[in-house]
Image (cartoon, rainbow, N blue to C red):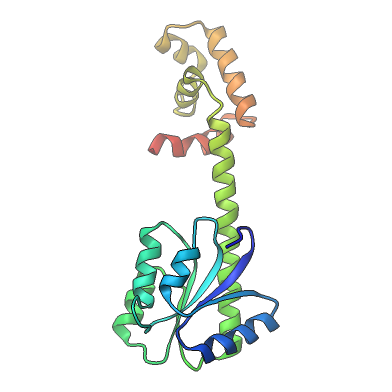
Length: 204
C-alpha cells in the first residue's frame, strides 16, 4: 500500500455494499480501497497507512470489533466508522468506547456517511501533522550532547544559569555557551518554546 495517499478503506464481506459505497465516495473525490475481510486489510495496513476505515461489524472470521482491537494492539490509529445491518447497543457502546468515530446502521444515509468520512479525514490530517511535528522535535533533540540535554532540562525546570553552574560545578560562561547551543540546535528563541519541546522528554 502506498504511503502518503489518504484513502477511505472499506472492509465489508458484502460485495454489493462495497460497490455502492465506492461509487458514493469516489463521486465525492475520495480515493477508495476495498477489502472483503479483515485479514486482507491487515496484510497491507502499516504505520504509513493514512485515511479512515468504513468497517462492517459482522464478517466471517475476524469481525469488525476484533479488527478494531487488533489495530489498537498494533498501535495503528485510523478513524473507524462502523456499519451494521443488525447492530446491538452493547456492540455499539463497546466500539465507541474503544475509539470508533461512529456506529451507523445499514442502509446508511449517503450524506451522513460523507459528512462522517470528511470529519474522519480531517482527524487523520491532524494526527499526521502532529506526528510530523513530534518527529521533527525528536530529530532536533537528538542532536544535543549529553551535557546540553542536562542543562536544557535544568533550565526548563526553572534554574538560572548561575544555579546550573553551581549544581554541575562548571563555569557560568560554560552554561551560557551550552544554552546558546541548545537554542540554536532546537530552533527555539526563548525558554518557553524550549520547555514546550523538552517536556515530553521529561516524561519518557
